[in-house]
Each structure stands twice: as structure tokens, then as C-alpha cells.
Image (cartoon, rainbow, N blue to C red; front, side, top):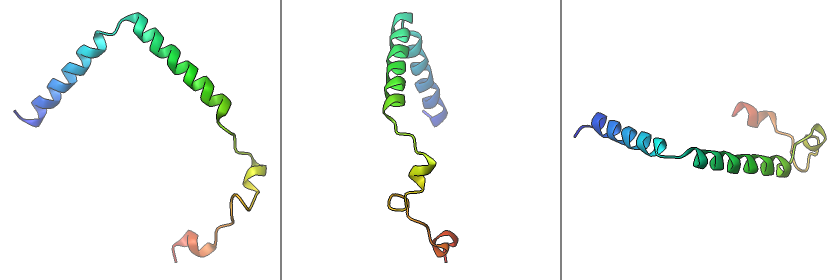
Length: 69
């Protein structure tokens, strides 16, 4: 068996598994993804210019480090 045949078989198996998923399962999966996106949107801090101005958190880079010298 060559690599091309193996990949074709794997792709066919994945396609068969996907086609076996019911519309209800797809809807439930989409609902779970939405809940996760909403949670992450609420709990992911947004970095502001004021945050970036904090040199304790974001120290200034030396010119030597930027050029790799």
C-alpha cells in the first residue's frame, strides 16, 4: 500500500464519520462553540495603550536586541 492510497482511505473514513453526524449533533456542537466563544470574550483581557505604556510589564527593548548585534 502506498502513501497515496493510505491518505485516500483516511480521507474516506473521515468523510464517512462526518456524514454520520446528525443535524442535532451539529447544532449541539455549534451551541457548545458559541458558549465557549462567549466565555472567552468575557474573560480575555484587552490590552490597552495604557497597559503597553507600563514599563514594568513591557520593558523597553534595546536597539542591539532588535538588530541581532
